[in-house]
Amino acid sequence: MTKTLKCISPVDGSVFAERTVASQKEAEAVIASAKTAQKEWAARPLEERIKLVMAGVAKIGEQNDEIVPELAKMMGRPVRYGGEFGGFNERASHMAKIAEDSLKPIIAEESDNFERRIEKEPHGVILVIAPWNYPYMTAINTVAPALIAGNAVILKHATQTLLVGERMASAFAEAGVPAEVFQNLFLDHDTTSHLIAGRNFGFVNFTGSVGGGRAMEIAAAGTFTGLGLELGGKDPGYVMDDADVEAAAETLIDGAMFNSGQCCCGIERIYVHSSKYDAFVKKAVEIVSGYKLGNPLDEKTTIGPMANVRFAELVRKQVADAVEQGAKPMIDASIFPEDDGGAYLAPQILVDVNHDMEVMREESFGPVVGIMKVESDEEAVRLMNDSHYGLTASLWTQDPARAAKLAAQIETGTVFMNRADYLDPALCWTGCKDTGRGGALSEIGYQNLTRPKSYHLKKA
Image 1 (cartoon, one colour):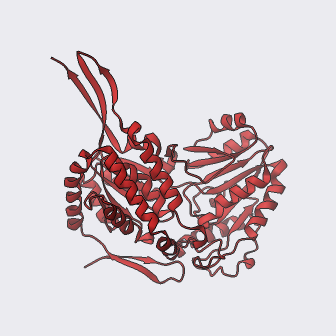
Image 2 (cartoon, one colour):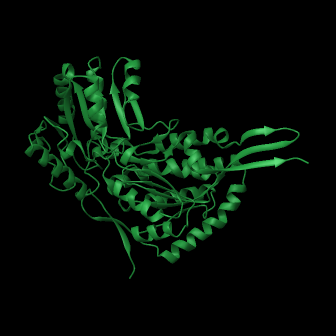
Image 3 (spheres, helix red, strand yellow):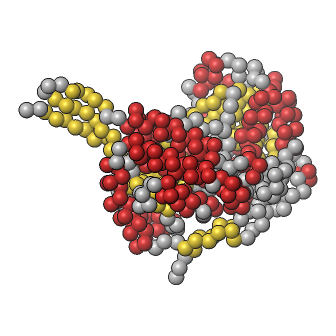
């Protein structure tokens, strides 16, 4: 029986797009064509690969007017924010800029007697499994450097953003990247696992849930296939006694609520020094109360529906459980009449929370944030580290030395000072604990997308 994938639009619950799932035999044929094409692609000069990849990036930019409303219909982000091309282009451009230095050989010796060097060779065919929340930016994190490094790429995108992989592969082919070198596949979970277990890929990069990451590790067990895993997050912010409260509230609350809270590095817990607590909470409530929940195709909408009803149901349950345990909701949900009990969900701020509550422990991935009062840096660090996750942390202070001291104690992949919810392509995007392993972007991103090969040449 033919299987299909359906993108259910959170805007109105209709089927927005539908595609047929590839069988394992069909997928293996696609991968075989990629393996053949990869050899010729890797043999091309680096400058040529960079030029073609950046031409593909530009083609996506040309489609932005079509992509923005398409994203709104697929996953609910308001059109007023203009899509993802800015970050998409920034990340690809940076990886193109550093490619020559990042991929050049490491020379140990060049003498009359010996040539000893380490080359950085492509893995071959890389599988990129991309999520729906930032479907273009998360995909390009791996797609661009993988292609530039000489790999072929198979992209499997999330069902919620079903058309993204198709658009990307088509745009890159139109720009001149050989069609077999970058291909999109519509796959179900079982076929994906079988393909990984069958040693079809030199490397797999997965961005998604912790459960999905475990499935990747199980599928790859015993194959020695390299894995890059960016999984869940419960990212904290800490507002110190010398912080600019206005700036901290504006940035941290935006980091908690933008994209309906559906951000890998979104702020999900905030700790505020007691001397700044009341002022911070007041400002946070003022900001959220000014949001406009509604149809993401309406330019006036500032917060759209969650991507799927089941995601909204999880957040509602976390909030209800926290309130039952004594948390106080600070946002009157009645000011958001568009909250329909389905995908449209009113944003919420909770105070009087603690770490016995699921909303402060487990990933929410929605428009809710808990705020706790703390009395010291030591208490804040202890609470920030009291988590299974470790993607980013945001510190707010006027003292860089103080921030650096605390940053060294925080168990996380990235520490920000006076900003949040941002990915700097010059720095490694990585996490620890249940957030996963490996690292994307930066020079380290190229290290993960290649393998070292040593040459020890003794001259006659």
